[in-house]
Image (tube, rainbow over all chains, first blue to last red; front, side, top):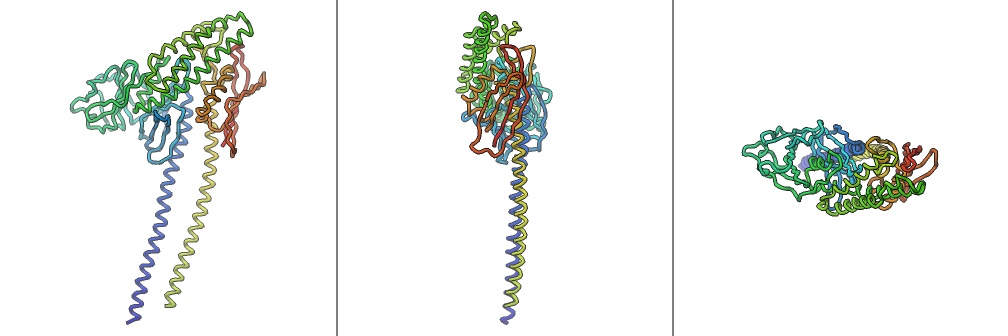
Length: 350
Length: 157
């Protein structure tokens, strides 16, 4: 009887032992697989960001270029905090991010796609200040309520839109409405309009009125203002890069934050150009005290204008709402430059 | 009882050897990952060095001023260069965000032999460095003449 009990105990204990050992081994391997999965995803995100960083650098240096960038299907997040000036982009959920402290990148806050669309446009004020990089995707549709402001053909947009009836929804990732002058129907969507049933976070709008830009988000059946109105910083080019920047940005804080990157460049360049023209005049007088070019340079006028530009850039960086009525100074410098260009023997101002 | 103990000992020995083999496999795998990681670091550093060189060669602070008629590529305005290096010193943090640890110099090769240090931030300890020279024209706006030079971008880590 005792022996029978011993055998039963031994067999039972063996099975328990096998189960425990088996479970431990299984958990060990499952743990390794899960850990490797996380590491692989992070590695993929890092590689994608690395490739994109190179593409963004190249795109940011080439003027007026557009191009598609094929990437693995993922969701990219773009952050630019107006208060701290911190900015980066990352693959959502990966924890891997690349900082962009100086490069102005205007894009929706989130882009889910396997093809990024890029467009580079320079901001001149009046000299070349910075190249802005605009990002979007084929899954983002723009409806522009104007026939004047077109995007490059690469982008998914319709222009000369007049009524809400022309605005459709065919399962796009995002819809962006671009208004000029005033919101259509005070921003209230018509009854039974397809956009009413679209999730709010997928539909945004921007309004250009006078010298300001207002951003909107959809809340149920109407558009509600997001944040404060941001001044539309002018450009001395026909294509105002700051206007297109507001079309691509969906967040007013990120828009203002990226604008300040350009303004920082403007501040530095104003100083350099001001000192440059002064130095050129001094050299001309050394070479020839009767130099026509030297006399053409009205040092006070140009130097004063460049100081004003520098002052404008500083004030705008402190508070973007200070950026009003600033085009006059840039036009003044452009006027001085035109006089120089007319006299081909003299160096250009910028 | 003895038989059971022997069997238990066998099982434990098998498990022990099994885990030792797994351990060897893991050590080999992590060593491989480490060397792969080192290789990737070198590649990343090379890419960053090229990016920074491109950015330096297209800086609005340096490139030749343009008028409506003509655009000159790979050209540095000497008058801008003089003041750009001052501004880079005054805005050290801003340019550190762009170039990190690097030394950027402009060297005139012909006909003169001037050298300008535009940006100079070296790390306390240098692990790796890459120098990328970029041929450029150096434009003197007063004399309206060009000379041949090189923009040297040394990136450190």
